[in-house]
Length: 448
Ligand SMILES: *Cc1c(COP(=O)(O)O)cnc(C)c1O
Figure 1 (cartoon, rainbow, N blue to C red):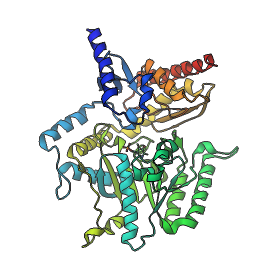
Figure 2: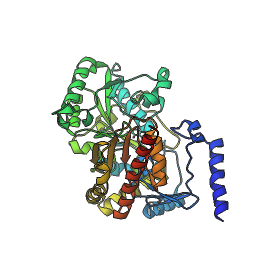
Figure 3: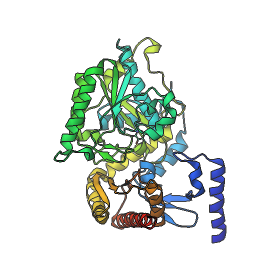
Figure 4: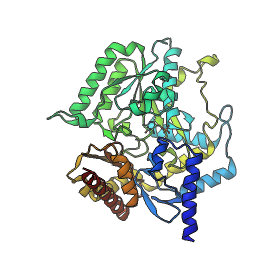
């Protein structure tokens, strides 16, 4: 019996390597790095075909909030499937999309929810809406964008323009209409004696200098509020966002906050920008929106922006669309996810939960080779003092051997677990994270 399971495990890997082009992967790596077949998932656990289980320490690329197969979301999805699977949203409407749009409006203070299926498309929509707004208001020259150093906003050609990660962009540089970048307020860049607020002020000063020169041709600034996740969980002080809001007002540039990774409680508040008490012009949402069950993204904006498109002239409208825009199943999953926040007082409970997870991580945080240990809400990150270019890959493999899914970015180990952890799971995650670090570093010593 276990032999046949074994065989199906290996067979599935072989068939996958022959038929599937996996994302974010140099496929040749899989000659040595084993691809992991997952048979099922429940709560925080992923199970392979041999019954081994792994704690999902990165919430499956930051999308899963309440564990896999949450009964409340499942029940809502099944009921929705019985009622209405899909209908095009141009010319038609349905309950889940209306309810979700109302709910997102209440939560953010912005409205007119526009939908797509992935984060990169949300970025594209926000950028297109911003530039089109300026065109509709008689200022078509305001059509360029500015982002932060190390920013990540997705990988379609339009989104790559504001994604400042060379490895993702270099090969496509000729296709991309590159945006400008201004310095990141990353608190790790503090000079001796500088606080995180000082770094934020310095970065805001650099933005101001840039805007003084370029505001006339600039439609929008796009930022990941509080945490630049893909850059390696680079965190900044909330004061940066206040300065940024003031500068965008003064220089008449839209402020787009990309909450795709930081939204839905990840940083401690429902949305990260709310910690700065500001209202952006656009908010991009995705990832946690459906609790990690179905692809869905949304862009919310102001009445002012919406009204600039409202006209007898078709061409002044926002004529963007995707086949699955506002899919009822995905919207229903999002509504069920938001209900879980309300019913279970999640934000308040996460404060206590984060404290006990931080305690479990204390030995890792205290490790001699760890620098810049940092935490915000349900995000933890540690920079490892290593020069090994293969650190991330080897660490991930050792972590899997210890029953945890952790996937460092460069030499930054991070954890972004689902919100349904308890003390035992925290201990398992933290022990696995530390053991994997020790094994990975020991390997480097042996290899000289
Ligand atoms: C993941 C991510 C995106 C892109 O979302 P996809 O669904 O992967 O296209 C955009 N912005 C941020 C901040 C992200 O973390």
